[in-house]
Image (tube, rainbow, N blue to C red):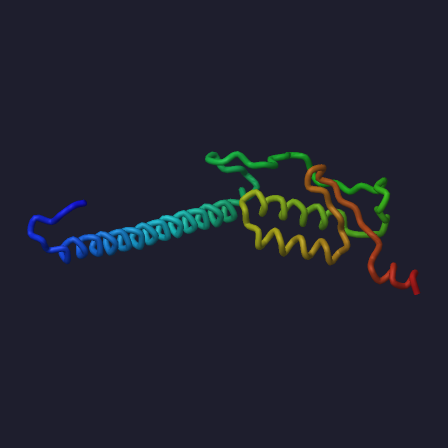
Length: 148
């Protein structure tokens, strides 16, 4: 047992309460610092993304992080796929959309990437990122007419 030389046990209780308050204040300050640092990183990344887009080098990889898919292989259409349907589409437009989507994914601009994905899905385009190939599939309206 520890005894206070003055016999005042209340003073000992106050020090533990003060210690708890100090720890709580430290945790709050640490959380604020972490949030500020995170916001600064986010702001920096956004500025870099805008700079790359402005310069037209959005597909170029940054020096600080290696990218997962830095393939220089171009997108191309395949017709020999089992589910592929040879229907007329603007190949150049589809390739351009896929290139823009790949560039957006490289710089982690997922809003743009998702918007382009929705456009491709609306055009009934199926693509494979790993092989960088794409094909058309039957339009939903055509398949519903066949079932009726």
